[in-house]
Image (tube, rainbow, N blue to C red; front, side, top):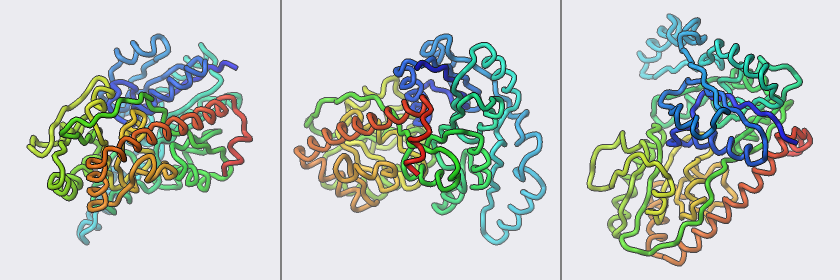
Length: 404
């Protein structure tokens, strides 16, 4: 049965130069492939979106609303951020050698002015399903009555996310909140989409009364040809997200020297991560690219040495979808545990990680086998997630309960 679906996203789909943008793009494409009438309301919270590219892609199914941070609760009545109490707490803890980062309230980034645009769009089209990208924009779901199926595509766990950064000696960035606030936002949905199984279990425990289902990333599937031309090429393809840069720096310092001692491999760095890296003879920067496939064609092995983070590592799925051997960390492997050491290598940094890369560089038969296993693994995974998403959109409650 064809549904009218509205996706409300504070993140643009274009340019497709970051994992979270690609997630949203592919989710919309998948729902269109099912035959549904899919509309995108982009609330411009994240800068750098390309409205012309979005219109070229989605046509009259894309609608834009200009987000204004001055209208958000964060600016109007900040939840300890920027308040005297917040500043005092930060100063006291700093005196004792500790950093203090106050969690956001779940609605701190929400612009209530978007509700008029949402109401007008709904009055015009009469949607059956509304999907909100990210829990921090979930308040918009209160615009819809019980006849509309309300879904949150979570992407990540935000409850206590700041503590994950602090444990790595990093300054928390982007959005983070408390488990209590995260629960408050997620309760507004009928269905919660987790991007990987470990996070499904977390959300199911946080909201046992809710329907929670895993729907992973839908990557482009294209089995690129195997090559053995020397020098072989490692690829690090990522955005300038601090988590990505932290992992790359660890690789360059601890792993890359060992790999260069034993092989003639070269290292390519692609994506906006290049903007944060100095020029260096240790690697070649190719910057932003129009088509991801063109970058993966140059690669023999893809590395993702991420050391912390939540969600699903979109670039891992993408690399395997192009039939590329992947070496990542246990953190990078979260949500893909059943493919470890068969479809890809998950290795601890630095020694094991370097040895796995060297093994693939020197053993062409192993790398060829892993390329095929990677492609087949992602193909099967996407078949499973496609079936789940199709059932979600048909709103069959039984499928969720059995997964708890």
